[in-house]
Length: 491
Image (cartoon, rainbow, N blue to C red; front, side):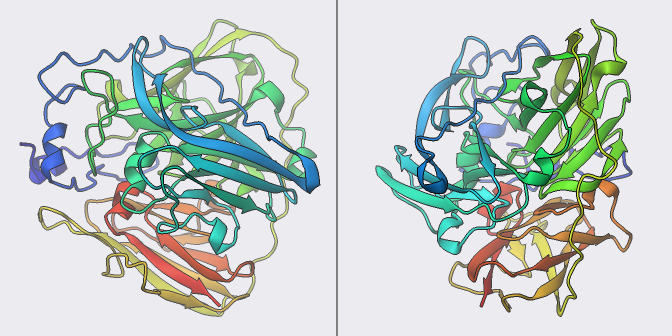
């Protein structure tokens, strides 16, 4: 059997940006861990399914979800949550959990100030809870971990969209099941636009492309293998649901809406020729100013809004979007997708020097300290902890005055295990990382922030919208399923 010690011993150091991640996310050793042994993609003695060579399948664009009604000043959608078979590996039908049969989930396009109502019908055999990640919504519409709806029932969620434009997403959040449900496919993109964004001459239409990135593990029959805290087994990288695909582009600017929908995997993305990318937004929407970089980092649930100008390449050029973080070898996890420049095209788009003006941060009246940790002492079932406690839905961990602004100092106390931090309801602003000013790519509104071992971030949040109880947690979903979650109540 693979031991905890041997798994942690195989941890991989990150390259680029001077950041360290071991990838050792403390495997939970249980009866299911036996499924994770071996070196192939299979779980038993059968011949493993053959994952295609990189760049031999085409990356699809994600379908746009269409409303069933646009009457009454709102867009109404009807979504069926169901298990279906979908082709991920060519020639194989893999069972996945889906929103409306789509893997990954479809794109829902919303507008700030216009209400969206979604009626979800659950046809699975398990309860579910749908969380709009990054959304400012009332507690009854937040899709909290215990606020589930049963098989063969429906639930309606109302999203007022009274917030600036941002690249949000929605996913399952049923506690103890969220990790497996999302791994098996229950996630989808929610693009919220506003007047400021629509007034900018950014790439749009077919030149604005949402891309959901994640990893996966398959058995010998091509079915997804879920093992809690499976750090080293999920080594097939998917872009829009296909393994290391290619995507044909014109020699012009494209806007890519990147989402890391993995349970556990961190990405550090770069172009194979070292070419520049321009980051224009993060979790909570547009940055104030575009940021030119050669590397984009995404922890689970983080998003990045990125423009790549392919006009600098001749037709016929092929450029790989690489990932330089493990776990896994470069051959396994290093080739995310390939851009094939196949034609020329006119391009009237441009990136303004100023994208938007962010409001000044209010004076913070309260400071709090939050510590994330996971047992690293070799116990059979390590716990996920916040401030030394496993999540209890009945316990209120932080009480916050409505209308107040606060500074939270969040620390990853682990020496091996990376985490990140996600807060429901609010978009926060990062003030510091390890005592230093944050990099430009983290300077905009965010709802999720990475924390490698030993790191500390300081963030500013204002709680002036809804009252009620919400959660904050590590968004390495296997960790939150193991208890790394806490409650805050605004009153």
